Image (tube, rainbow, N blue to C red):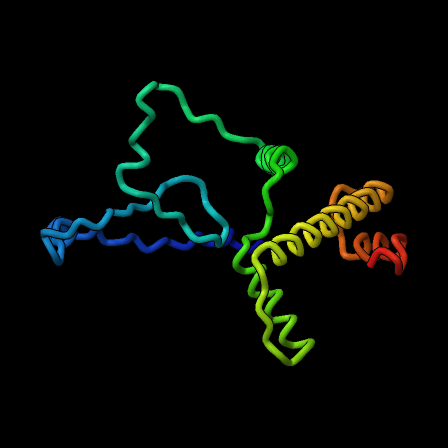
Length: 164
């Protein structure tokens, strides 16, 4: 019979001398120190660095900060957006987009009143929100919770050419 396979000896790493560990390039530096976190093997993923004092620090009350479960934050954001009545897109980027489209279509620059752009933005956001609602209904009908491009295409086809 064949002899059992030999185990390879792992090379032991030489410890770093204390003189190198305590040496710093600038003594007056105020940058945060980072250290590696220990733990289980990560199977090829990089280690995460944390601030040196962060791991040891705990909240003053002694209680741990409550972690949100997956999807909980998304639902919280959805509720917040449903409650609010303010615009979802920033005004200035939308105004730039309107002016850019207008210039491409008409090959001439026009001046816009702020209220005109605001009215256009209200209408555009209302249209998009309605479209996403319809797409969400399409996804739910297909027994999914994720909106896909095919849901948006179907919602637009169902709406017909009059609502484009």
